[in-house]
Image (cartoon, rainbow, N blue to C red; front, side, top):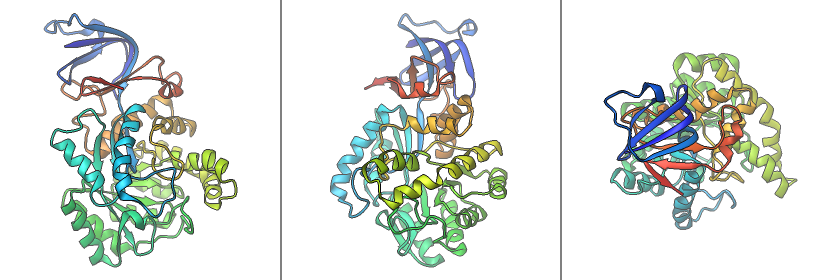
Length: 388
């Protein structure tokens, strides 16, 4: 048993001053104010005094098998299988304790997730895997997708990826922003196709996440009952209100255009795809903040693995969310509790509650006072063990 005395703890919901976190055998025993420790709890002799403690980050949108420093196509999956483990280590170094992989081939990331369920890789972030996505023939992301045409093919593909081990279904509804030769606005999947995919996924207990930039693609997705909109650049107030009413989550992935602009344009100043990313930033930020204000459950996701978007800076998504105008304390909820709920991991992670995994971060400065404290060196614990 070990006790951490902190100037302040964010438990995933609220701040607690002069707080204590007690852990034992990888689980949380108790958390709360120091002057409220129950009499039946005997404080361990092993104690540590720190500044700030919070739950580990949850990245709801990554591509572990994609190499952000290489062209999108062709993909060398043998190399990617090795890189995926390195990317998982990089996520851990950034403070991530769980992630959702939304597109690779049909086995690499699913294999990692299966290994974790069998008790392996317990010092790594928990992985929720989609495997291959579902896309229209010739549509966005076909190099990491099963190409489908018509409701029957989307139904069959959904069944196939679930057979392969998918824990969530990813559907490519529109073109991409930073994808050569594509336009992000027009929809690529018809109403009957997304309805079929959602019906099949939900019947088999899987949530559906959709890549959707354009308004029509978002509308079709929300009307079909998807569980999360990924990106959601060209959203609108009426759709945002519908999302809030239905409980549809938003994972804006602000890092994707940010790094395309900051790094992509530096390396490739004439690249039209990076310039398109630059053009959508203001609207993307506005609609993200509006979604938060209207009560949509916003979750943190980086889209790490897309061009110039690294896996070792997941914390910067929180900084970008704060820069849209979302208060820092709410950003911390977005980056922890909300993500755990979306990934179905809220019984294990997302908050510091008794009985949950002791997966948390120790910071030298409060990110509520300065959100960029998340970017500094931090101590990372996964299931009660400090990791490097």
